[in-house]
Image (cartoon, rainbow, N blue to C red):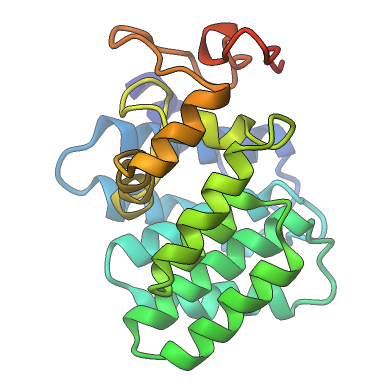
Length: 237
């Protein structure tokens, strides 16, 4: 992982930067977070912020850096910065945001607004997500938890797990820590740990999924393993 950090940190940011170089910088930030230790979060945020000078309308890959940055700003207590970033991206009509991008920025905004005491705005946005972004169940469930709507989040998780065609992402997220590479902030990981401990969610999970063995570890971006599914559900590549 240190090699990935060093490689990404060696990339010079210029007006002619390539998407592959941007990916290397994002990978370096992820690797630094995975290594942990003193300064990991602040250093990763700083490296992602170095991409601020890149126009996301020309390099869509920068949006994934901004999504990561908004989440880690929340984790580090920089709620106003996180909310401002999310709102800036959501209001930029020049960007070709996908529904998943929109849901991710809205989820981050909901969490930051709640921390800033802006409960009414957070609840309104969480409700909008329920109506508009149900295809991105992960973002909606996390936003509902942030907004204090845990029962609605639980109900949505159970409904999603009951549908084999929609359950894939949640079957992965509800696995115990360490089964999949994950450098997301602790708050979001704790949402899925809490959900997995709820009996009704566990029952819904076991209808279509299995808990992976303790020693199982999957490399980043690898296909989801067939072992994660009950025999009635095929693996997704």
